[in-house]
Image (cartoon, rainbow, N blue to C red; front, side, top):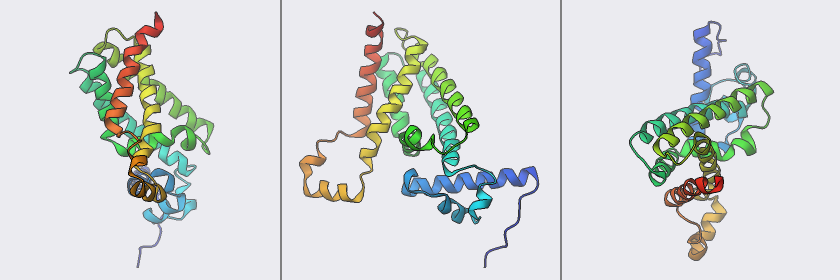
Length: 217
């Protein structure tokens, strides 16, 4: 028999409950995908009623925006450190691509950022998220311009944004729904027409990085 619900009253208890909600949401999404997790799923996993989850986060989408910012900050930290060890656009593109591909949960969140997670949230939540995104793009962009002197910080920020857009298009191919998996099993030539994620992402990001200085001329 589960313990009766107890309202968190102290600040540390509230922080613990917020973290429990975020942890449950992440674990569910890592198993099933962000798009398939409902607010009820999260509430059940953490042992709360939906109304109690809403005391901490306004919507399901808000929960995943918080997780996106956390995962994205970790991604940016790793990328910034690795960029200090490389030089040239191809190497920098490889750093960006590898850091994405090695973090499928962040890729999944990135895929749904504009199409799902920015919907059904308050203006204040969007303000926090967009400011975080701008700051992150510019911070990593500055690191890119240091590793690639031919690129300006603005070019670097644009490259981060472009890499995210490529991820949003390419990552879902790695997780086809059941009907597509069946089709690919029946028609291997159709499956073969879709490029592998890591090398394709690297190539597209590298091509964009190489072309950015030419666009300014």
